[in-house]
Image 1 (tube, rainbow, N blue to C red):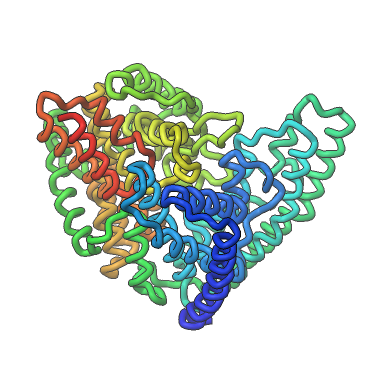
Image 2: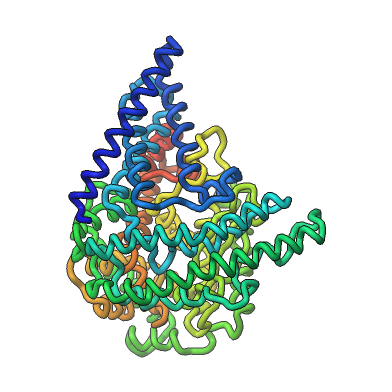
Length: 598
């Protein structure tokens, strides 16, 4: 099916759904014989759309603490995607019809934010992004493997719901396979080099013994309020579900992914070389940067400028250390000297934990509001570690039994340098992703859809800003640690150059590898994993540096406007106080902060 046919089907379904919802709304108004205010209209739309999103995304509903869909997995067939597109268009029409001038100040934020979210969803459905439901960092099958993380199971029904989800995996996987086949037919696939890298992690999920699968984890320690007889029965049903449903689904997907899909996968690596690729990449830039007036060429030039500036700072540290060799020789020294590497996974985790607690100690100096939710330092699961990035942050499940998780990759310890660990911890834990995400999840008197909202430029920009804030926090102990921070900043600046180079300027994979290797001290394993991540996830890598530059711009603006009245703690609280926002909305909040502080 080509894109024109897809768009026609979208339009027909959209029109029918719009007529139906319009008829329903008209009758509702006639029956009530009342007119409601703009604020009430918005509240009604927000509530309806929230309920709609939970029903359509059972896995997200579970993470949001809503349990009535715990027995289901998402439905992602083309019919379901068409239906969601039509519904989102109706929601958008209703939003646009609201008289914004009569909304309260808080509801103007809610209105603008929900409109941004819905427009992004509509763009994604129109581009049919479900044709590529995975990359090197996230995937539909990883969401299944992680579906029990933090999930509280108190009674038999909770475990039965989970078993029902296990039995729904074949249907869910099959719908994704059908979508990927549409990608093959329409020349919209992952590049072959990426498929080859992901394939081993998929193959690793096929077990002869169902108890070895991570899907069996909830049944290792069943809630002790459940009788032993029922525990035995639940375990038997879980083993059967994993053996008869989950593992066959992974087997089928592995055969498809490593056979038909691999054979059809593109030899090209750039988004612009895909069918409708330029529109796709433009969508990715807008989605991940939340900037609407910036081109790939401008981003590329910004990256080159930042690379030059950071390289000069890195050279100054090499000179400070009295190292007599070249930049390349210094980075080779960092990559190979045993003093910079942990000897065991436990040592790496302990070092990260120590750094995290040191940062916790000074947090009140820089932030007036601290979240209640804790976090832990957790190894990346072994089954995905070989092709996973250096680290990541995973939000706590609402109402769950775990805090936030700072995932640290302990695979290939000789590729996980200790001199980068302080910057990494600042980014993923505090004051980076955990602090920011926990603050967002604890917002009061805001619609529920805002509590788990995430914009990459805001989130990753804050993470990179946090790395540099660590200098002011005094947590970089040695010049090597500070060089590691600059290497990480250089890494993010290089992303601007490499992502746009690959996806808009026709760069090869090797060009990306060479550029990142020659400008950072990242290990070769990290370099290869990073380049493949950029290839498989166009645009996302742009969010870090562009977001960070925007946050420093906002801070400099506030410092200049307020002078002696500027408080860094208050600025940080204002920046984070409304949760995740597009960058233009963040700047508007900082303008209000400046006006209120004068």
